[in-house]
Amino acid sequence: MTDPIDPTNTADRTAGLPIVVAVDGPAGSGKSSVSKAAARKLGWSYLDTGAAYRALSWFVVQRRLDPTDSDAVIDALPDFDYRIGTHPDTYHVFVGDHDVTDVIREPEVTAVVSAIARVPEVRAFLTGLFRAIIAHGEKRGIVVEGRDITTVVCPDAPVRILLTADEQVRMARRSAELTGHSAAHVGEALRRRDAADSRVVDFMNAADGVITVDSTDLDFDQTVDAVIAVVQKETHV
Ligand SMILES: Nc1ncnc2c1ncn2[C@@H]1O[C@H](COP(=O)(O)OP(=O)(O)O)[C@@H](O)[C@H]1O
Ligand SMILES: Nc1ccn([C@@H]2O[C@H](COP(=O)(O)OP(=O)(O)O)[C@@H](O)[C@H]2O)c(=O)n1
Image (cartoon, rainbow, N blue to C red; front, side):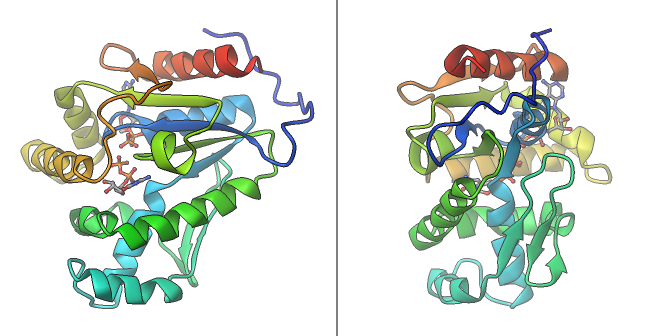
């Protein structure tokens, strides 16, 4: 286990901005759960960027728009009133007055998110939103996870990690949490989404300066410790 972090250590962070830990990786690699646990252990904030793509997908479906009609999706962006919490334990996701924290994880939303995520204007809009959320962070640091954080959203982050695992392991992990859906169906959907997503952003290969953490043979706690060890080595927190 790594040494306990003193979350009360509030030494002045870099002028104005929190320390950013950028974590990318494919579905089922553990990005969300491991990043959340690491943020909790560090006493820092946590930002799930996938939730925004999922919430926009939900919004598009709710408006009965065609998710593959990029013009219609772009036209809807000004009305997309998105809010998300950044506390690892109590974060909620809102679109307008709707709490969509749970519904955005449903397979119906997951099935259209890649189509939404491949629209360049959507990516630019959400990237600006992510950077605003990060800039307004109140904690000393923030763990930000997604697909393009290490390469597009925060390419200069002091800590950049590619969290990955063998496809079979990732499929098994995702299937274990999506009860009521066949493992074969969940696995195939995950493989299809990885393929679609990696045509937009390369999150399967670590860019220069990005440290790979492969959790294939690590349990959850070991993976969190591995991420914390990288953060400590790179930032001396
Ligand atoms: N190293 C690990 N060992 C075992 N289970 C893990 C590990 N990392 C993540 N998990 C579990 O796998 C599932 C998917 O993790 P999640 O964080 O949702 O992945 P992602 O956000 O990358 O899609 C969750 O149930 C999580 O608890
Ligand atoms: N920074 C990000 C985060 C998510 N996404 C898209 O949003 C989808 C859902 O992201 P997610 O992180 O919630 O998905 P999981 O990896 O948790 O299954 C991904 O499949 C991508 O299509 C993206 O394009 N860029």
